[in-house]
Amino acid sequence: MPDAYELFLNDLRRAKGLDLTGYKRPQMERRINSLMRSLKIDDYKTYLNLLEKEIQHWRKFLDTLTINVSEFYRNPAQWEILQEKILPELIGRSGSLKIWSAGCSTGEEPYTLAMVALNRFPNVHFSLLATDVDNEVINRAKTGLYSDKAVANLPRAYLVKYFTKEGNSFRLSDEIKNKVRFMKHNLLRDAFDRYFDLILCRNVVIYFTEESKAELYRKFYSALKPGGVLFTGSTEQIFQAREIGYNLISSFFYKRGE
Ligand SMILES: C[S@@+](CC[C@H](N)C(=O)[O-])C[C@H]1O[C@@H](n2cnc3c(N)ncnc32)[C@H](O)[C@@H]1O
Image (cartoon, rainbow, N blue to C red; front, side):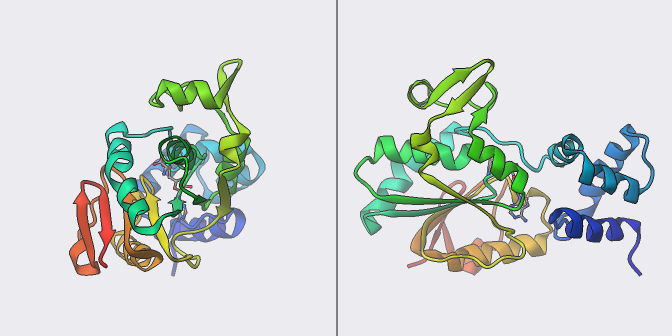
């Protein structure tokens, strides 16, 4: 017999398309309950109603689960390794790049990649797919309007070249926006495309259960070309990497065996 939390997850999935069943329950439940307390709501049904009706509460819900915080050039040292070492190797191997930013949130990650690829490797053809389970963040990504916090780590040359200031916000140019194809996709449920040179999945799995993580990393392995690379987040070590067939080529970069 499912308890109240499990019933809430079922209703949430049906109403909003967000499936939290593969996520760690204690962390999720604590955050959701504290949100409800702050609104003086003590039953899940009333809360779900509010989430359905009021977009600002839905945003707050996602933000509080820290499900969708992102920024351009997040963890700069890792972007350096990507540009200096990983991308040149992948290009040497394939000549072009098929890239997937999985769990792309509001677009900062795939757009950073588009800027890097265009500037560092201007003659290389690349395709860039960006997916997220949440339609709301995809729509924000397509709009391309960002806060100063989101662009704080971005090299200044890119900020000047690809953004125009609008009040306190920064609007991304169409040149970069047109390089990314956004699509709704649930990593825990939907089928994966294949033959990627590079997959980025950073700061997405932190609330996934160990089982869903392990399965996801296997599915990414099959979705990569031989020699392709998976780029993970700073706190996301793959414990079964060797067993799956990955070689760790640099911290946070896992290469599929040949
Ligand atoms: C914290 S953001 C990370 C954004 C970006 N990758 C970065 O590192 O800055 C996590 C994103 O993962 C998405 N996400 C969570 N669960 C997902 C799932 N099952 N399938 C696809 N995306 C998911 C969330 O909607 C959110 O936008």
